Length: 261
Length: 138
Image (cartoon, rainbow over all chains, first blue to last red):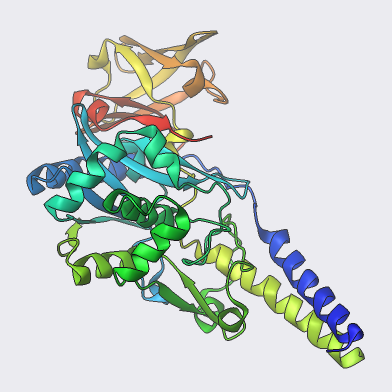
């Protein structure tokens, strides 16, 4: 490859990267909720609490539908771990902070979890096996352990097999891995465990994005953690709720999806 | 070179378009939790005033370092209720004396709204059990 060609490639890549960066980290639109939205969210939280109680489980994987992702063939947008505490159910999950390319771990009530600008007032849960729950439960109440594999740098489409960024669902399954195998103490090792257990991410095709239209949102987007051969053949792999639920069931680590409406 | 640069710009433009569309997709939820913009009452005195569909008027707003207190008056009979909000919850609110407020009763508490927008959530015992917020990492 000639030097000129190399320089051209570098320039082009930098230009493309700048284009992405310009759209990362937009601040969130902070619109106050309507009374109806509050009522429906809290009602969903109340129904979810009852359903979680009825499972008899100590830990469940809980998902919400914050966005319409039907163009991607996806039903849910975000998941966390709900666990039974002396004061009720608590959800540990990772949230992207508006206006930055960062995200943080939160422990919230079901009210806060569903008091989002939901697309559908519907939730879904998967009950992990008792063995999986028993290993997860102590870690979820431990702030050091839930933070252990957290990478603050956030991309909405973070590559599942890289450690540059980490999106919310990715934090969840890596943390799951960490609790199940003491050797999975780093993100790389947790990802190796997930591969070994047969986890398969969702592949998003660019043609699907094009159909979505151009409503400019707030999510932080980066592609530089994706392998070039996949990125440039329009295959963007990332961790989705639907792929996690399918894997939990397929691998025998969890039961079927239960929908809460 | 020129055609190569054109391809490069085309690629950058495509990248921008994809970023826009991806941002639209928001495969993840962002921290747009409505509760972060909706004050939750710490305490309420005389909640009997908070009946379904009641129209109240904010007659007094007192702000202090420890929080804010709203005094609400029911239009029909002048009965009053006092609502206490934490300083954090009350921050950034534009509720002033004279604001007309509508009460919505739910199984988890009450929602006060003004001009169609929720301005406060007052949890009852069921609602309070569903609420908790702790940021674990910075």
